[in-house]
Image (cartoon, rainbow over all chains, first blue to last red; front, top):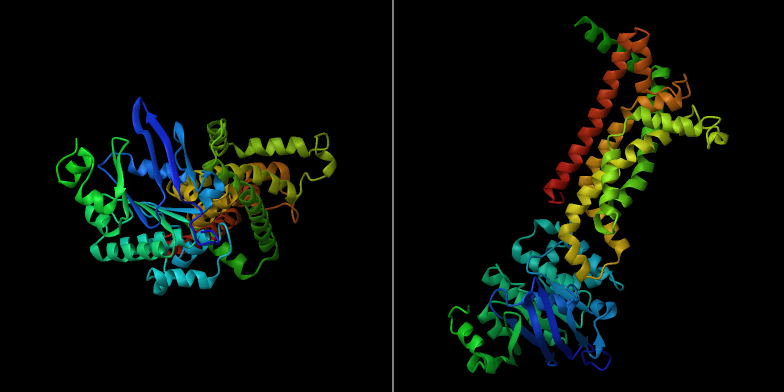
Length: 241
Length: 235
């Protein structure tokens, strides 16, 4: 966040992003501009390129061509340090819950016990601060992964199906954390298969199919009047082949 | 059977009588082996971690070389160190031949490939799981390396033990570069070799039992630490 309160990483501009392997286009000249605060949801069937696109946004994958800018700045290490990414399967260090947060928190700036406790309190893990992280339940692990992503105070939080395979109570807790973060000014870009979750959280939706951006519209419009045939088929519960 | 019981009785008697010579030999064995282990770990653990997480053109060759060096014959190492430290050798001016330092040097050459190659394998497996996380958190290479060593600490304990086992049980190299000089470079293994050659089998076996007991205690301690770590899901 900039001092003026405006998110310095916005708008996110994606310009003809192209990526392919073995002659197959994984991302097909993908262009879009994400300038709204709040939560942007990326939807689409399996193999649509959602996770790959998210990884490109964070610089974990390099596109063959095209560029991504954040607030007018090309993706570089400084921009990456102001982003955080949460994976579908949480990767936790073989340390205690608090030490996991301390590792991430101390990576690019100061991180004291108070910050750690505040973050653990936010995600409801304060009582487990001295527990070994690998011993946590699936939902607790994912909440810790989200807390670890948030402790770096990112301007942009990327979540790759962070609620997949979790029970409803855990999904609810993580969604609350995400909406709280969004309300405090962190831009959220979330990949999900869950239409219900997208309806609950999204302010705008990017719909991808076969590496191509089919549409990018406000969430209300997307769910009531999808513009693309692919989105209509997908939302209608039919198989998108 | 009487030989074994006699040896056990001799060993017990030596320990109970706090035999100064025996304890001097044990102390030197432990001192030389631990010093060599410390130096090897200081070199081998970061080097193993580096090889595990950094990819460069000659990486497979370097890893293959360390894997091969794990099986290097101790007498060959002893001979190489001897040639370097002897009066006519390039390091002869240091006057280190037939000193505990020469024995440490030989053991370092023997143990470092073991520590490097085994820690590389362990950290490589760990890093496969951490790679994306470190990339996502933009973790600098040095911090990633230290984090891997720290998180693999309990598994690396086995590597350190293997190194200690190799060092404390080694005889071929230390007898060449140490010379088995009484009150100076005589360690347990060289004493066993000497007593056996003299036909003093009871004393040789007694020393062997003490050596075995030491190895057993170290292993038990490591197992206890590892089982505590397993309870916390850290291994």
